[in-house]
Length: 577
Image (cartoon, rainbow, N blue to C red; front, side):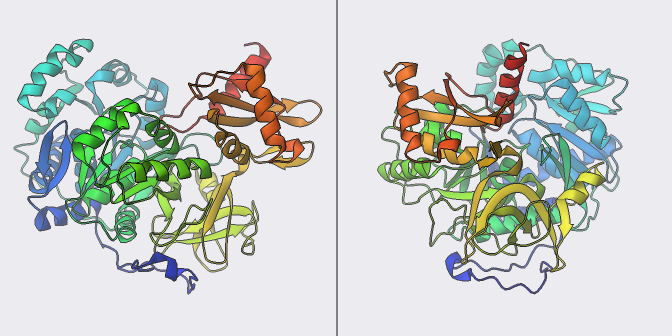
């Protein structure tokens, strides 16, 4: 099946090497794509979890069993099943089981607060919720909330998926921290859920069209408010084929270290579905901290890893990485946030020192198109560029707030069209209309709310979020530009630049900086050094009026620097709250 598009010529095929610019896409559902893998690669490991390896034929049998169990609970086609789990087998089995019966998988962060989870359940009118026993207390509150109309709550445990020897260790350590969940009329334990469907005799596989809705992910989008993004089978399957096409070195059985979370487009789309729909192996990591990363790399020797810049910044500083052999890597990808030029240089040097034959490839994407839609090609990289569009994906730069396309080299709003573009924001037609717009070529583009430009060879350059731009005394200041320059300084570990209200300038530029651990300077000395450094590199109006030092910066749930949260903290401090 070909992606229908306007007659657009792409001028940059030469940079894709052996990658075709058009693909023939799978015409079916996500679970059917996994079924094909189970037929073609039955004895290849689909996923590994805490030392337990599961082959494709076993994995698919687990999906079928869970699908029968969902049907036994009365889940209907087009209903939503909320999956509020970390990266563990029950989450991905339920993800594909919901798809098999024609339901939608509603992916929610397990560390979300009760109100956020309640919002996601109500917004999608979810019939079922799958949660982890470690977070049972908030689920218990939700199941008894009369405003929430869940038919059943299924509770899983990490223990369920461990080998026998590890279960003993778990019971003596981690298991002691949590109350044992008792089944009830409203609450079913995972293993009981599977048993309940064992004898289901009716039809449980629902034939879905590639264009049918399949997944709901969440994003702050352009307004900062939580929005559910409805994505189709085609969106996810197309992404899986694009990821593999742009990585022709991939072979079935190759391993991806899946530390990016399953409730996030990057984790679910790249680390999970792109692997499991093409015969790859996902190494599922339920709880992750950067200190354990070296151990994971040594133990698993993955072929591919994906992460956000803050992960790589921390990785290259780990003493435990000394002597780790990374020659196993075929690909390392950075996305989810801007990778500074300086960090890329340091990471590439680090990879070479650890025997890797690859360099980091930066990508770009948005949850509105599942995740990545642009990647640095194998054959060429350009300083500051996020790469070139995936096959069948088209970028254009528009005058912000319009569909007026700008010439190459001109900065404007990044807009993109292609097979991974979302269906809609659920229950939000106005925001859908603002974000999805039909251009003169007849194609529907996502207006990303990001500033960037494209050169004549099709390489894209991301600047920053439009709404993040600071206007001070009538001048535009781009925080990410200042952050990149600050982060390149020898004494800086990381930085965040925000605009703070000022009666005279409208906004003043303020920087928050985390110094490297070995810096032996007073704050005044460090501040003077950084200001002198900035004055040589940026316009005077862009130099932060204030530089504050902190031990750490707030992060989002997926590891980005949470500039909005920092801004809120500063505003509250200013009000004396």
